[in-house]
Image (tube, rainbow, N blue to C red; front, top):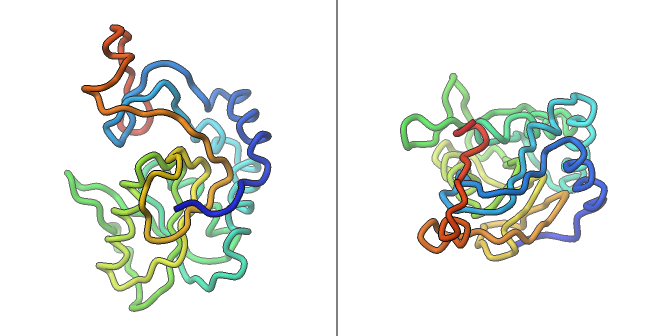
Length: 196
């Protein structure tokens, strides 16, 4: 479920192209799916002032939503999640994966019934958002909002709340066995925090 039409989408996508954050090729995504398009948001967020501006734009979606904490999955969501937390004046936590299990570590805790906004950089299948939501609930928190810089779900993903995004891009993805780029013999690249 997606919420609203992104503001300044064209401007953001143009900026991503200019800064080398939007790549074309054959990529293995963290979801396990393959795609011809990859968003490397770290290339945007390396500029503190730009990261601050993008965080403030995402935070604006939650002006009327009571919340206590912002939580993001490591590694991709940390920078933008921190900037959203700065914009809303709330504390920021992140989840980490230990082996296959996502959890709060480093002594992070949630108070019972604390209201949480989950922020990610790019959402493709919603897997990380859902994992973080389960962690939040397991620690006694309540998820009240979901946000990302780029929503590439195409609206095909069931999420518990509307997903707010600065850009919505319909990008085709495939299971590896059905990938036409693999069939064409194009080498696959595993970019991002779990690859190169």
